[in-house]
Length: 310
Ligand SMILES: NC(=O)c1ccc[n+]([C@@H]2O[C@H](COP(=O)([O-])OP(=O)(O)OC[C@H]3O[C@@H](n4cnc5c(N)ncnc54)[C@H](OP(=O)(O)O)[C@@H]3O)[C@@H](O)[C@H]2O)c1
Image 1 (cartoon, rainbow, N blue to C red):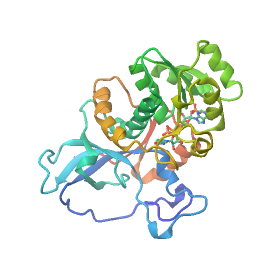
Image 2: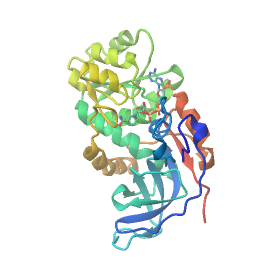
Image 3: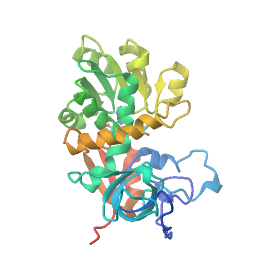
């Protein structure tokens, strides 16, 4: 939990008794929890936050095993493997979760992959729907090596689109493995993209929020309605481009993201999308995981893990 506002050092392990599940609830033994930038943004408020909201329970997605179900739950049993998204306080050993936030975990997915699939995947699905990416089109994905970018690349490829993905040179091989043509971000980006796609870019997805990503997309995508940002919320409000997610003025896409969970699980189970786990940390080292996430160069997903239980 975050016990105050500040940097990752405000995270600490706190003992909390886990309640018995009420109607519509399930207790999950968490095996792995996905790390997302939204996790550390919650407590990293430059101006501080509402002290009454503390402590903040962190973690929006988990994978684990059902240990107990509420009195009215008939379609899940103790022992079943599940993925929870969105949950509140996923950085935990045990968690009470609404049944509606759980989907069954396919056997072929590891706990770590399962815990990193749905938030980034549902965000990418929303972005692809909002920009209308179709078979045969060319799409530019900014921050293609990150958690969301990795999903956006693979899902766009699965739709038959050609993808150009921005990344630092160190991540180019990774981005190419995902199925995109990598291009370095930084000065001259628009020219490099034009050289790769002389016939033009149909749509763009920004998963980094830099001015460069916004400016280059506005320059290259002929129809600005086919450019969506997941991070540049202020720029979106000024320019009228699509902003998606939890930022001010953004389309939260609640329904499309909830529905995307089932398709993502099918695609992942069939090996058509893959979660690349960049690094795992024990739950007790969430502070370190957040430091790494904040450095902004994760390739795939960071995941917190709980020790193996019998
Ligand atoms: N709106 C929503 O619904 C929503 C949902 C999820 C995430 N987000 C936001 O979307 C962003 C990405 O999330 P994430 O989970 O994918 O984060 P992440 O995994 O931490 O993404 C890090 C990636 O960003 C790339 N990157 C860093 N600087 C860059 C630059 N100047 N230009 C292009 N790429 C750059 C890095 O690539 P290199 O290592 O190659 O530099 C790295 O692979 C975050 O701002 C997050 O808060 C929004």
